[in-house]
Length: 145
Image 1 (spheres, rainbow, N blue to C red):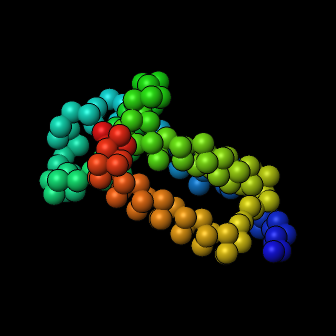
Image 2: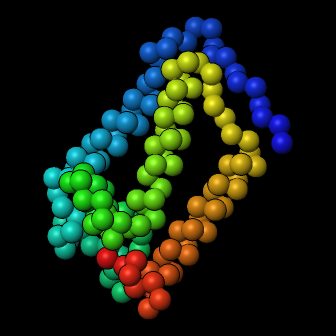
Image 3: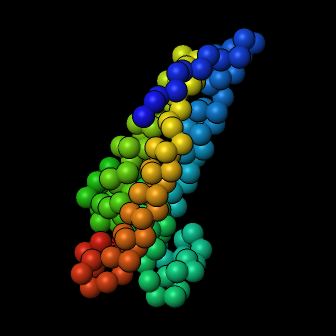
């Protein structure tokens, strides 16, 4: 497997301009986290009616909202109870975001190979599918909220 060489930024692009996308992502995540902290998704209907809950099964989305609320209140075990997959993925997502931000700051773009991206996407989709199915069976009832 060959790793592509880091690319240098376009000549006219300043560091501050390169930092706009990571800043927007961090700001969006901060606003979403604050909204979930202030409006508790544990309260039935506080964020509207979930279509999958109406059909009678637990999806990872609602549990993810509850997990963000729990993490914003420093309740790690409650967050893991709400959505273990999300809680376990937070350090990985943080690392990817920090790595991307570092690349934007230094001007050395970090790019994974197409194969690595495809494999990561496939693993993520499979993990979410298994997690969703498992938490809706008696064997995985401990994963349901």
